[in-house]
Image (cartoon, rainbow, N blue to C red; front, side, top):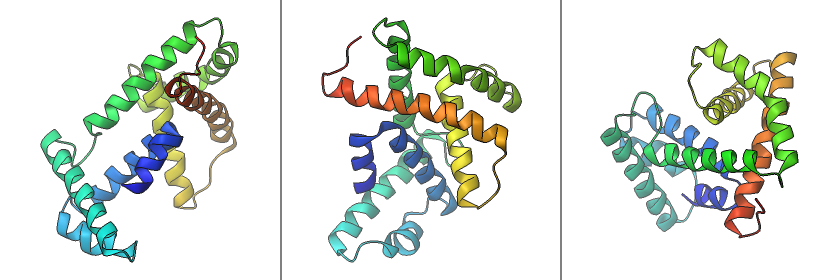
Length: 180
């Protein structure tokens, strides 16, 4: 909960990836609140109150996952909502003549996004969703210490830069400093 809150306030892209990872973590525990508390939360803070708050938050996420039918796959509505808001901002940035660097980064990443959509069979998937799926997939490969090919590294370089600019724009918009 604490990490999610900090990431939400500082880097929306990292927040979304963290939340996707948390969904998968909860799936690994079968969305069983007792197991999550005993086997996962217990490994963190020495502060019992903090552990209780974290366990309660994760239990609520498990409940939401069950209610929304995403126990085996998919994402919580709140995470889809975040991605939708990011997409709205993305479209505004693309239309703005005051954001040429953003548009340039997007168009450099676009061929890789199109290729990824074609490869994974999700040709109709929103572009940002494809980007986050790629970022998440590479993150998982790195956690498993698996090799990442040169083509993938190049694609991820462009996608990462593009998403970083979007996250920066998100923060500027939140602070009332974004010029569109």
